[in-house]
Image 1 (cartoon, rainbow, N blue to C red):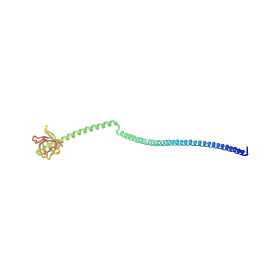
Image 2 (cartoon, rainbow, N blue to C red):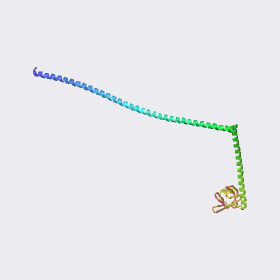
Image 3 (tube, rainbow, N blue to C red):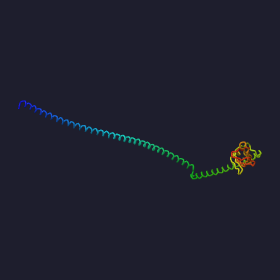
Amino acid sequence: MSPLGKILLYVAFAGAIAAAIAGGLIIEKRGEDAQTLKQTQDAKLASDTAARKAQADAVAAQAAKADSDKQLADATSKISDLNTQLAAAQKQVTDATTAEQTANDAAKAAQDKLDAITKTLNGASPQDLVDQAKKAQDDLAAAQAEQKIIQDQLQAEQTQVATLQDAINRSNNGGKMPGVSGKVTFVDLVWNFVILDVGLSNGVVPNGELIVYRGRNFLGKVRVTKVDPNDAVAEILPDIKGDIQIGDSVLN
């Protein structure tokens, strides 16, 4: 082999060795890169897992806080209700104490009154007083009934006296009635009488005659047959000129 061939052979051999070394380095580098990539991926996966766990923990913590806040609010409300109930119970106790004191005072006052009544009775029983009160009430009722009878009789007698006095006055005045003016309130043509809205208090007297008219029309006359303080019954006289109606005027 020529020296040049040997040199080329050495050079080729050296290149092969260098290539082998470079390839080994590259393979080693790739392995390291792959390992680094795997470590990075594992770290990212762990980080993602930790982040998800942290997020889940945060959500759970928020839920727990909300539940805790609700429990706190419920507890606060219950405490407020209990305080209100306690205040009401204390007021009831105070009211009951006051009522008890009032009842005791009333009982003592009643006992004092009973003692005074017992002393006043001087040996008489309460039933005796009840009987006496009932008898007094019965006597009062009887007296009032008798008084009412006497008053009714007196009123009837006064009415009769007034009627007689009017009759006397009528006789003295020739049967004339002073200044009477009224209206017809009822007409009965079958029985031939009318009712007037004037009576003794207006100057109407028994047997007195009144003129009946409507507007300017003369209708006839009526004669008083019965008279009360505020109204009168009158007979329609035969010389009637027209049908008398409710609302027609009368005067003397």
